Length: 288
Image (cartoon, rainbow, N blue to C red; front, side, top):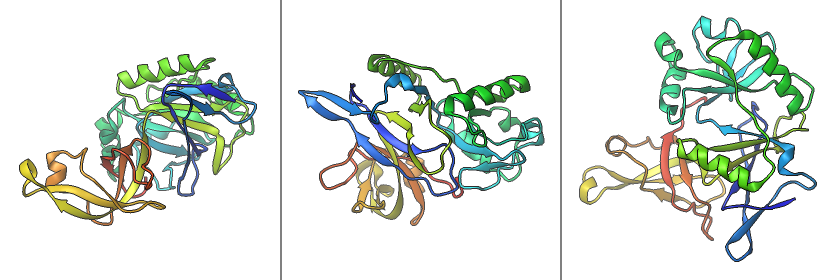
């Protein structure tokens, strides 16, 4: 079903956690007439068929019922009090410390010796229960009841809501962005849990994030003389390109190592498949 929207980008993404390396395909808004774009939802679906939540800027975590793992299956060394009361069935969620606090979460989660005071700033925001065989709506009801019974300050259900119009969706996205949020996630209410790529989970942002491998550097000029000016990177399926913005002076003095993975932000692609307005976001840690 088609909806008119304001310059949205919807990304088909993986169902919440898979042990495989995550990937995605992109469905861009295309102009219907003049400057008004439209988006195709999967055939027969309406906006009201989806639950909408904020896309949190944290670290994806999988609770197996016994152990807390990253999305790629690496153990997360959390304090005993953080996990001791979690249920004996799998949960999926985001380790989150509030908007624009990803560095704090990353540093805390990667620490092999858990820092108790830092962990107390982190919440486990639950958004799925993969072992439950119901629809997303039924799974949400199932784990919400259990999380409420836990009554723990660091374990919360990620709020979900329904919207009926693109205007309401746009207003919600604008409000989240105004307060430093990244975007929205749309979960199809009727979707059974599924590993791998699915159109039952949609990511909605006004920009895209992607990952690339650092290949080399260009020296800085002017005020960046003696520092790194830009990095050359390569991502699968695209020609090499350089990123020269988004870096702090500290980044330029000690740039990402050659061969490391970085996350960057961009606004679509040129006709040559080069990301538009690419800007550095962060180094991607191993195992996350």
